[in-house]
Image (cartoon, rainbow, N blue to C red):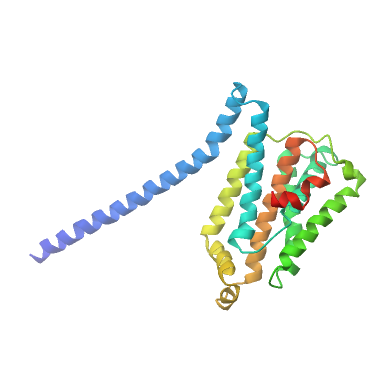
Length: 263
């Protein structure tokens, strides 16, 4: 009798575990399928529609600008939203990435587009990290003030360097950007920041936003996680700058002033 009761108990438990595993497996497959559709369908569909004439050049350029602005807004949301800091210099980091990548592809080294874009993103991230070290040592609105000042410095420096066109702008940039390139960077940006936020590092970043003192008392290195969020955001701002420069084929210092950050 006891053996029968034990078997009656074990059987449903095994079925429950199997159903749980199957459910998790189905969720994983659906998750990968959704990400694959998000990544591949627009990248493949939009060029086909353009070649068939259903999307003209104007709408194609609008779609590319949507992708670039998506990278900028998602990366800025990591700083201003998830980490709770207030940056006003995102357009300045975009300008750094744009000028560095444009010089590398069209003027100085004639690098391929992908390495130049990565270098533009890395240059923006390094500058952002250097700015963040003193800015995050204090609390309050110092980051907003410092990034606003940096944005103005970037614009003024670009206006006074004749090698990159000065106030006249930088023409003749090779048009490497297309919708496929831009959309793949959108997917990468969303994927990286999404995975960062749902990880332990992301929970630490959000804890700093909720209560910085409590997070520090809980053993979280507050400055480290502020710098991490800022570094990632600046990298993708630089990438967006490179994509924009190689789409428009022309950049000028006034394109990256404070009003672009508010846009």
